[in-house]
Length: 141
Image (cartoon, rainbow, N blue to C red; front, side, top):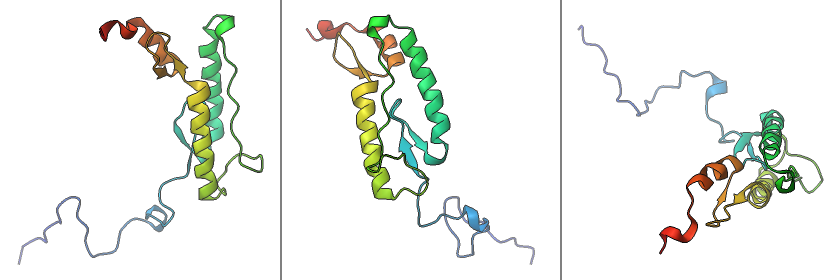
């Protein structure tokens, strides 16, 4: 008689069916499929990776172009799947995981740069900022 039903507290679930359309419900597939960029080390959606890597390659070339010619590095080669192809939406999860481990290794070995004073590794732009304040072992005494 004039009493409104109480809402459940935020973050709790109710026994009623979800009001989200079927395509928004979580599935057994889990999180979106991503692959690691071998140039910047960030996870990117498999479906849009080509767009990302094109921009990332462009940024790599701009960053390297600021260096003296003798210090410039070539763009690291992307790893491939065992059959020589690149991952796509149909790549099995185990193969994508192995590929991502290899891409992360390429990023760490070929994309990061080492500070000549303290030995820490950085992305090119972060290294430039770090070098302005790095004193190496001077503070370690």
